[in-house]
Length: 170
Image 1 (cartoon, rainbow, N blue to C red):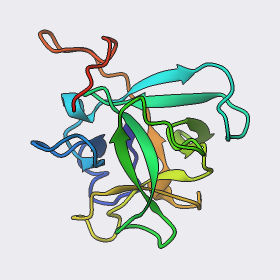
Image 2 (image 1 turned 90 degrees about the vertical axis):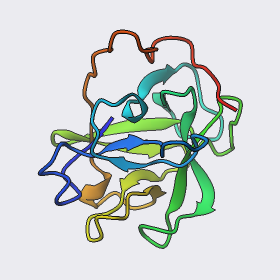
Image 3 (image 1 turned 90 degrees about the horizontal axis):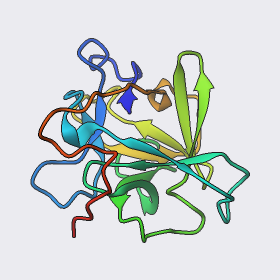
Image 4 (image 1 turned 120 degrees about the vertical axis):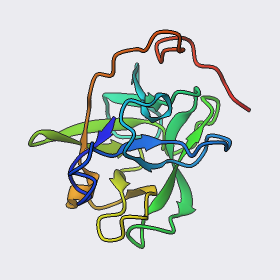
């Protein structure tokens, strides 16, 4: 999942991507210009059936390279709009209600908006302050910082692929 041109400066380089910070337990989600790196790629898993507490689907889950899923927490975000919450990676067993782990994609021109089961949208930050790389989840959907692109990333030899069963890191 690749961030689109909503963050000036990053649009001139390879588009920003979601990644986990190195040498930390993979929880926080931030932006990176390292497209195609193993910890910047997300696998899309279709959710079958209804998602309790959410509007009718279809929904997907986004699984990172270390087997954790992208969710919206209830924690107030330090960056982005005042009503935003933090985006984190959590184990599959963590299923909050309402479902912050279920995502819907809506096309907007050549990009996608990603809305989760709580009705909030995935948002890149750093449009005005480039060093702010946090990814948050906020209620409005009017900002270009909420537009995302999907790219197929070919597997690299000798590396675990995202189609393999997820390995849970504790």
